[in-house]
Image (spheres, rainbow, N blue to C red):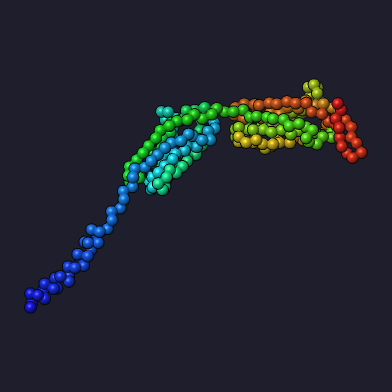
Length: 240
């Protein structure tokens, strides 16, 4: 009887270990994360100083590194985590403070527990661009015997573009110059209305605008006129 009790005691001591072993044996293995997929698309928003690198990634969980450089110089790197499903996800990286008209190499690397994928490409920044100036017809705006509002549109194309204008009685060679206090920037159209006061009635004026940026000076000129007569309702008319 003593032998039987000992055997039963040992069985009760061992059966929890058997259950644990069975549980581990039956636990499904975790699926391994596959090697990342990586595709590099065309570079967007290229200007003289900026660009946006674009990549399409399937990594599930991992990291993506964007590197760029001027040929022969040291790589500049930026790494950030990336998490995707099973379909490609667009990942972008904005570059700033680039040099104009310059060839850049770039490298994109994606890594996870399944491995690493990399792609190389390149782009060239645009050269400095002079500003654009587009005059609007003066008849769309107010003019009186002694004042004119001249409308125009500018596209600075650079940071800190300076706008100035000059005017004189037609062919008098006696210019009055004005520099606007605001500096303009960007590649979007900017509408301006420049107001000239203290003018002579029924007089033609030479009028020119200059926009200066890092690419140089852009100039545009036109002829503007003050009113010659007005009617009872306060409408002004130029002489023809």
